[in-house]
Length: 291
Image 1 (cartoon, one colour):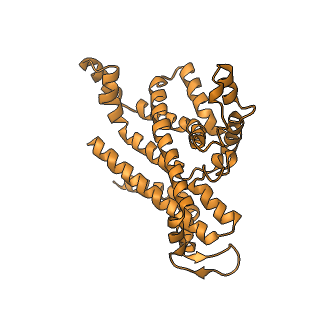
Image 2 (image 1 turned 90 degrees about the vertical axis):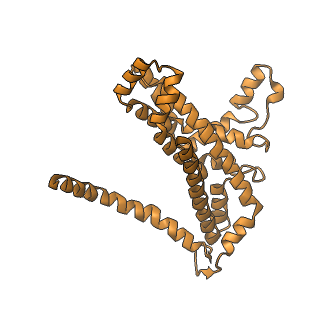
Image 3 (image 1 turned 120 degrees about the horizontal axis):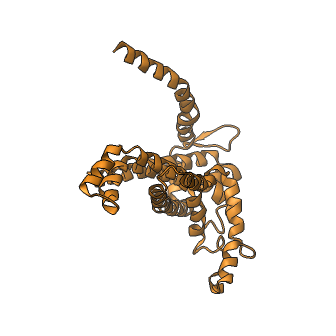
């Protein structure tokens, strides 16, 4: 008992510096940003209290709602793109052979690249004159499919979603592999005895055993998609005509391009609130499915 108490105190003391840094650099700025959302402020000089006007203006701005719609496309692409692909790859690459480790490393490699570099690479891939996508389409005789992928409002959000999916499959793959490998070997033996193999084992044993990890991954997908910025900013800057505007680029443009720091703070606070609501709804829905 005494040993466990000492161990608990040691763990608490070891975590305290990291917790303090996290609170100082993450939690406090969130509340500080929410506070500045109640002011009209250009970033320098005095502030002017305006109550909820910044929040009301954002909710009445059609560009804000367009940015939210685009963000929801990214969220859906992440959940229904990254999660299934990562899960299937984790099931196929579960073994620890040299080949499986190599493929897992290759899938994870895009995560190592800077998101700005990824945006530049995919910007060239989508280039209407010398981009790889149009080149391949022309090579296979589908010339009528070629287009300006990042300038066409009908497809540019879906084109932007592809590199985001590609970039972040790796971390979720590693998380799923770790979850699958942590399933006790006794359960595998029981499945063999009961004849639960293949698809039956996957649906009745593997997925329920890693369900908590799936929920964690979906939380990360939602949070990451709602703060997506780098790649879209590099590839399109939110254009043309704000057709690829996201909440983060909308906040950035209002804060740093026209120097409305108070309004940008209000938008960033709304992003946090929307993220929390979506995460809460997703967890409620998945809890119901689990039960």
